[in-house]
Length: 103
Length: 486
Image (cartoon, rainbow over all chains, first blue to last red; front, side, top):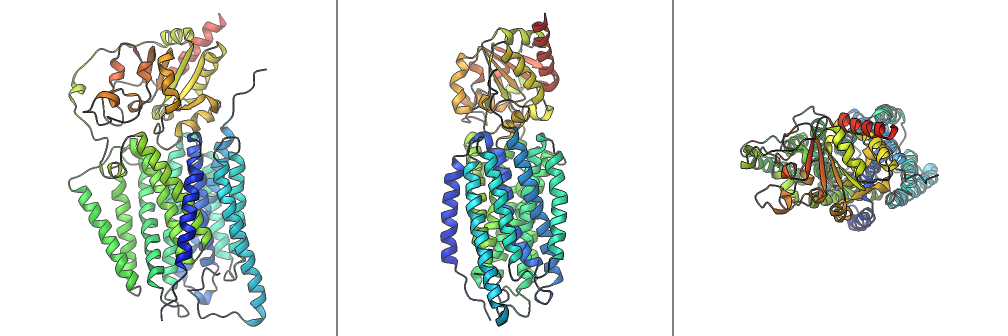
């Protein structure tokens, strides 16, 4: 038996809106901050962790050992990006300072 | 809406837990919406240095909300593997972020694209495995199509990013690796992967084909990056960023999860914009970057001619800069390699103290990733309002006394303006040659990454300063300090 067709129409709609919004917002990012931009978006796209969590957390009867192993590695890889990405972005952004006002 | 409904379709919640399940779903959906809004705000706030840190915090809160939402999901009943993953990830991610030197940012970025893509590929593979659970149904062809795209992009981005990491970390040769028929072989492998994916879409039960798809995509990723040279890394890193985002996005389509679609689309859009900016800054097209194998050694006629260059000492350089009213510094990858940014800061301080106006001209592709130079100079505590983009500063060069080139090469080569035979013809450059005096710090007269002779060094107003960037800038700064003391 085949699963029902998911609601791709509205997903596509969300995708297109998000992509346009992303293009508009990111166009405004100063070239000064392009490196932090990349590390931040990288951390954000590690949102795939939520999918990995769902796989790891499945009831034993509903899953396989292989899926759990793959899920655990995926959680680890995504968490690396989340923790590393936000921390390095913060470290970089802290460095950007304006000229001190002359005393 | 539940992410795993199509996998465990026959499972019906027991009546007594139905209410609890509803509340869980509502809470999970709410956290996902909050996360999506915060991610968009994060990128909006990142647009200016004054609000950027707020943006990063918004991103962190959004991510935390989403993770809480996921943990509350009613399919999540076991936590031991999730916690194990969290611990391993934090143990790898945190030390990397804390101790990594800023000069290694491009490598770390490439590695993080690899991690992100790996997660997407593995999640896709795990979902594929779950289709064959007794309780689940075979996937709809559209679902299967997105799943194949997810693992295809994830797998090729994983190996491609590892290759980029290897090149940036000098584990692999930085020069482009080319062989005959390279493009043909690459295309053939990509087409084979697509064919396998199409077969799988309509015959998901052909389990042996799935690893074939993963392998073909992985091989394609390696081959795609082989011919990429160091100078093209900014574009390639941006492109891999985009792919990693898109694979997360595809995962959202597979799982009916709009948060994944939104976050993935944002990342994809960001990578796309950055790669377009990088391509424009080199006057090249995507196809040219990916399949052109730029930076092959060019045995041009100019390389044979030995023209005279004027070389100077640190003392001479210091004297000229001291007498100048305005100095524009042009940093390049060489500054990063030599870790010269802190010495540059010393030089900046000495000159500013004497009333010299010092600015920094930042070419978009200077360094190995977008914004590379800005981060290094900010690390050395040079105020960011002194870092000026190419288009804004080019008009200042004719009025400036000294243009000091530190470890940059192709981005100041005037051949890009007039020499139609030059491979970099048409690339926008920093007009350093229009300054009254040009000083270029270089280790030797060797050609740059694009393998092109730079006529700037033979110009009459150019003075070559031979030596290691860090040592030389340091000695110029010392000269200035000494004359100030006397």
